[in-house]
Length: 81
Image 1: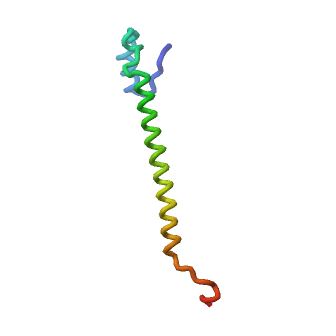
Image 2 (image 1 turned 60 degrees about the vertical axis):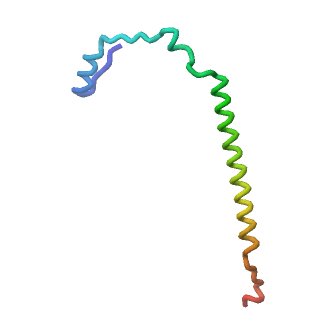
Image 3 (image 1 turned 120 degrees about the vertical axis):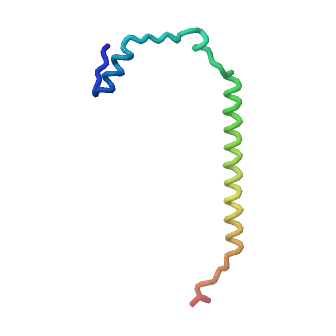
């Protein structure tokens, strides 16, 4: 399969690397460097931390709404007129 160069730099790169061969299919490249269990544990820990943060944020929002509602001064429309 030929590669078409669009400009002068592409043409030079195609000429330079046209005959290069890459062979990196050894056994070491196909095995994972990280244990699947370790990865899943890290993802689970991260998800639990995020879920806890969302719960705390939700509770804090509700507390702030309560504080604002208790400190509000309600005036009836009859008194305001």
